[in-house]
Image (cartoon, rainbow over all chains, first blue to last red; front, side, top):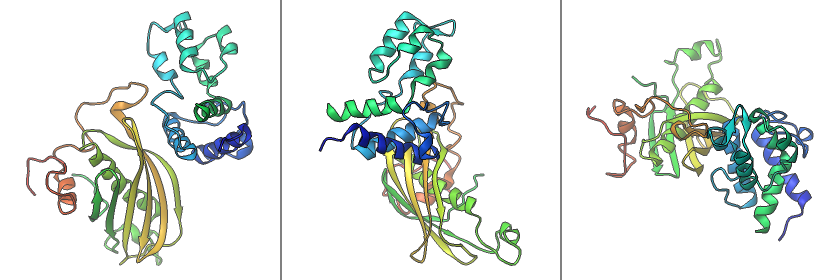
Amino acid sequence: MAMSRDEIMQEVQEVLVDALGVDDDEVTAEATLMGDLGAESIDFLDIVFRLEKTFGIKIPREELFPAENLMTDSEFVHNGKLTEKGLAELREKMPHTDITAFESDPDINKLADLFTVNAIVNYVEGKLSS
Amino acid sequence: MRWIWIDKFVEFQSGKRAVALKNVTLAEEHLHDHFPGFPVMPECLMIEAMAQTSGILVGEAKKFQEKVILAKVKKAVFFDYVRPGDTIKLDARIESIISEAASTSGRITCEDKLIAEIDLMFSHIDQNLAGKEFPRENFVFDTGTSVFESLLRDVLSAGAGAADSEQDR
């Protein structure tokens, strides 16, 4: 049975409330996981495990949150900003995320802002329909 | 010397489930302060007991080659007191395990009464996503801690991969 986007959002909300100990009204579509919801690195793995269980999907290592790999590669990062190559890599690795706003100022400190609740919903939606 | 806060394993299914026992006694000094006239096992020490049960289960799943560190207490809910003289049973299961981390769920019971539900996350810190480096020696399951071997000797079938140790204690 296919899930509607609203249903996916609802389940994702529940996962994040449990994993991060936040209130459900904090988990808006635009909320960023690290900035707004206070997620730390181990929380990302917790979220991955919970999503796998909730939706019965398999999430390959770093498919959902691939940014850490990018940041440690000098080919992708220069002067604290993502290079053209880095941006291309990011687009390829995170097709479920809209990075238009980030592209105008690809400061790696803002990379974390790309991990929003919406990005997770997009990812799960794509995964369920594939 | 390692501080071991569980007394023995009674069941051990590699990579899946471990059941350990802990006897609680008034000889534990902290019980005289927690609380004067009303000794009950501190809840943080129930989390510790579950962390050791689950942590050894997670460590054994990778043959004690990983440095397994408690990374997150996902859930800790307590339903009843544990008093001196009680034997608590710690039942831990691996929910998910990948190269970087593991997630476990656990229940503590005392004579079939539910005492606590404690779910944890462990990190294999050498495999952390940020690529940070840690000392080479395995300070979690080092070969000097033959105590892990003695804890597991009775429940692990021969050759199933208990902690290595030169000394026989």
